[in-house]
Image (cartoon, rainbow, N blue to C red; front, side, top):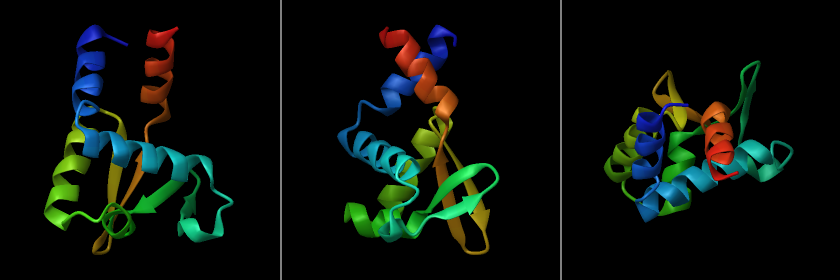
Length: 103
């Protein structure tokens, strides 16, 4: 991964709220068997409802939306519209790049 991409990733994660959102999404991605997670399973992996994230983070929809957009712009998550909902999932390639950088 190029340095400029890592800069975007670390800049996005420098916000405590965005870091918490990313950790939450990552944990949801890792605990697919958790019945309380309200996960959507697809061939591409586990996705999480944007609305559920709003409930869990106790932040306004506009604030969550802004943070999700920043995480998406950094390549940390992908978001897809399904009807009136947004579902987001962690980009595991970005997680791998972070791990490789730290090693």
